[in-house]
Image 1 (cartoon, one colour):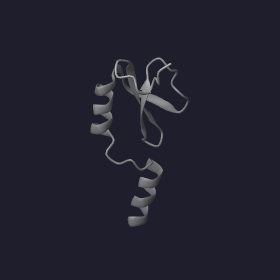
Image 2 (image 1 turned 90 degrees about the vertical axis):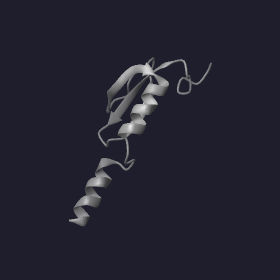
Image 3 (image 1 turned 30 degrees about the vertical axis):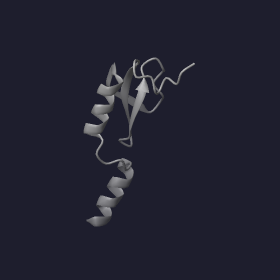
Image 4 (image 1 turned 120 degrees about the horizontal axis):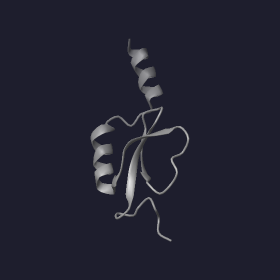
Length: 72
């Protein structure tokens, strides 16, 4: 069996959790609790491009907020 997370021919979703972290997720696998769909199902490359375009700061939102409040 091939790895469903690395199949270029499969359909994927882009998921985001409450910390603003993104995940490329195979469309055939149930979405885990705490994650919501932002895109898809669509081609792997389309989903990866969406993540690249929309996830500029990889820090969890809680850390971003903490850093911003410390700087105020």
